[in-house]
Length: 245
Ligand code: HPA
Image (tube, rainbow, N blue to C red; front, side, top):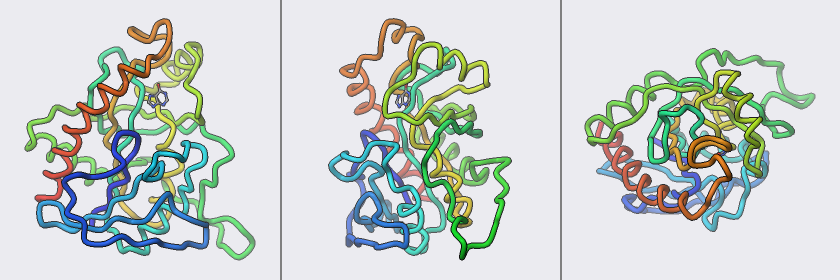
């Protein structure tokens, strides 16, 4: 069964025919909300709103371990993350959908592993390719079939938030090789890897990163909202096509 973790702008999947909701308790505390089970295009799907159904949990307070654990115990076979990002590369303009292939993690102080504590084994997962390549390809194929353009690849920089970056920080991220910047990609991706669940992301560029192009003098939230609403229609279209596989 496919899981979709929805971010800002995707607190529910309108095309999901809901069958039940389940509140899951985990050894790591409470997930962001109940798991919403249903079918999309006849296929079973489970949905979880990363920031809670009322969008009240900021990126640094999301219980990523509880979310991923809950999906594992729900016997999820793959996770598609939907998240909004800022575009660092000039050609990644607002409205672009991207399926990144690399991550740089700048977050700190988040619970980023299941393998800690005296009773747990020491384990180092391989994270050379942080996203599952087969699932990335499924996403790209689904987008193609849905007639939605997506940018294939790109380096996602995960920042701590909840504040946005300074222009100098964005320059630094670019020098590091980052193309996209968001606040929730980590530790979500590595936790999925630790539990052996294929994970890939579809990122919606909602603004130019701080100091760039239309964000030269600041990031304006009224325009973000519009871009987000329009782009999420396209994201839902891609998700429906991935389910038809
Ligand atoms: N920076 C970090 N996270 C984001 C941004 C951004 O510019 N836009 C949407 N999420």
